[in-house]
Image 1 (cartoon, rainbow, N blue to C red):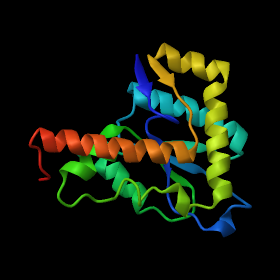
Image 2 (cartoon, helix red, strand yellow; image 1 turned 30 degrees about the vertical axis):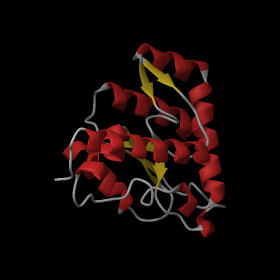
Image 3 (tube, rainbow, N blue to C red; image 1 turned 90 degrees about the vertical axis):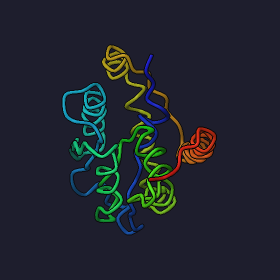
Length: 182
């Protein structure tokens, strides 16, 4: 069965957000950026989660598809987004591991560009709490399971450790296979 790794595909990677926004967050619609085109299974999963989270966050969570370039376009867009905590990246392995490890000049750093440590802790905690709660709702689990996915929640700290471990493992695998950045 396909897995959405840790809180829905690697991470809802948070763009930078100053602490001043934490008390009123979210103050406008939230953008959930995907590397995939509309209509696929990952898009469907994102829309199911967005619908559930919209109800509890009090603001719409809008899925924005930015496919192409192995997810680098979507990742770069989120990394350059206004630093207000309202733009997030639902990413798979490709933009988080392969783009940074196999491109000579990747447009973002998978750790620094999306680091929850740069976001007001209250925002990270609330987003994580709402995402994990959405993934536990029976209707959400049933709809996502029907698509062949299994949701696995985590904390931001667990996700950071997982991301670092995966970068090391993929980097070694690429080097062992003789792959170099192009």
